[in-house]
Amino acid sequence: MSGWNGAVKSVANPGGRPGGRLAMVASADVDSLDPARTYYVWSWLLQRTMHRTLMAFGTDPVTPTVVPDLASGPGEVSDSGLTWTYRIRDGVRFETGEVIRARDVAYAVERIFAQDALPGGPTYLLDLLDHGDYKGPYGGQRCRAVECPDDETLRFRLKRPFADFDFVMAQPNTAPVPAHGDTREDYEKAPVCSGPYRIRSYRPGHSLHLVRNPMWDRATDPLRPALPDDMTVTFGVDVNELDSHLIAGTFHIDVEGRGIQHSARDVILADPVLRARADNPATGFLQYITVQTCVPPFDDVHARRAVFYAANKAALLEARGGDGVGGSLATSLIPPTLPSHTGHDRYPCGTDLTGDLKAARAELEAAGLPDGFETRIATQPGKFELVARTLADSVARVGIRAHVEVLDTASYYRSGLGHPDTVRTLGLGLGVTDWGADYPTEYGFLAPLIDGRQIKHGGGNFNFAELDDPLVRRLVDEAQALADPVARHRLWQRVEETVMERAVILPIAHDRTLHYRHPDVTDVYVHPAFGLYDVQAMGLAQ
Image 1 (cartoon, helix red, strand yellow):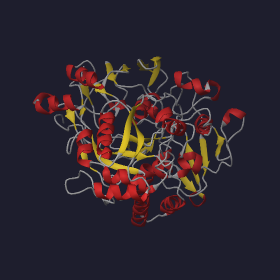
Image 2 (image 1 turned 90 degrees about the vertical axis):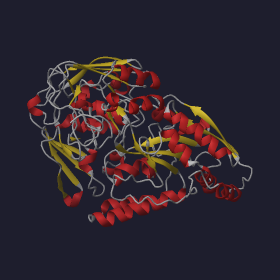
Image 3 (image 1 turned 180 degrees about the vertical axis):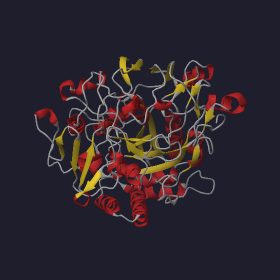
Image 4 (image 1 turned 45 degrees about the horizontal axis):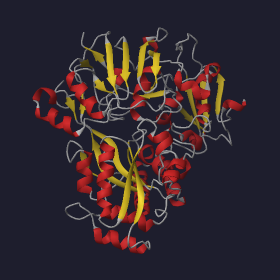
């Protein structure tokens, strides 16, 4: 199938053959090529071409399932859910020719604990594994919660039962790392690859060139077709110029997947030929404003609620791309793609969606700030910046003077909005951001944003508000321990309700993104777990 939305829940232009160069483009660099330090969703999809993980998301364009990758099967659960055991496939090799052993995956997991040296990636395992006070492998220690009884067996000891563990094992930081090849902070410059492609050259901020890994064996890899001979990514192209290049055919896809900007969007939708090469999926992402509790006066819940009531959601939704192609109005946190979604509106903003200014002024009075206050809004170029300026106009109506601070896109989450020190130093009381689930469950969606145990003080933090609420933590743990899905969903709704009472995440839109694909791209589909094109599946018409 091809045509409009041909890559949504189906594969567009199937039947590609090996060969050719897939040319990709992005407005910014990857956050990191080190599998332990990457958190951008598009970087994760790019990682799938270079690295194999213990488990991996499958290639079903409809259902986001996890399947064995380096492992020969799913995790074997024992000890009342506290032990998970995996077997490593035979014959899988690094690009150096060395056979990948269980110890190489264990070492990769141990690197996650070295947060002082390697911040940036997901840190679920720091909280889940029964590791004592382990700080990583660089002091010569081994993690007691990760065992390798032989070269083919990997065993994890958990603090508490956690039904989503196979999902966690599909994250990039389970990609094997040979201990003797680990260059710590410099590993991101030249990681050792285990997937079908290896790095020929990487110029940070400029380009990435991937070529075939001669040590990759298709017979050991049930996931990756590896059709192109090589792949390139050109970084740092202005978002509007990027769209022009896509339409002109200079590049095959925007690997970053931020979506077509407003001006090019109208051109594509008005042209039947161009429209037939476009896809507009519901991504499962939430577009939102984060309110930082560590930046005064937002340490007062009433100051936070004043922003919630003053927000002109009609204008914010239009700035994001408008109802329909750009997304749908969000009044709650959990997206419609998950079963716990309710759509409850804790902060109604009027029938015209332009805000409840009377309620906002009442909250300012309650905060002791009847004349408003000054703050800063963190953002990055493109659609985020337009949203930030729209928000500033919204809250100015009640005396909140918000200055827009445009930060670098590539480091936005590692050392900008995602670094608590930067937030405090610059006084970033508000921030424009978005979020998609690390994996498609309620825990995968909400926990990194609202669980205080996942606050990262060294950078790469996604609990921007630094919400560390005992009730929230308790409800999260209770929900994850429940076997009954209906009861679990009810508890996640309580988690959401509690967080909304705290007024730290202002939802704007449940995202839809307009993607554009070159007509020569084959075997292309929007991955249901990521909301972006699955790069590793693509081929080119020969």
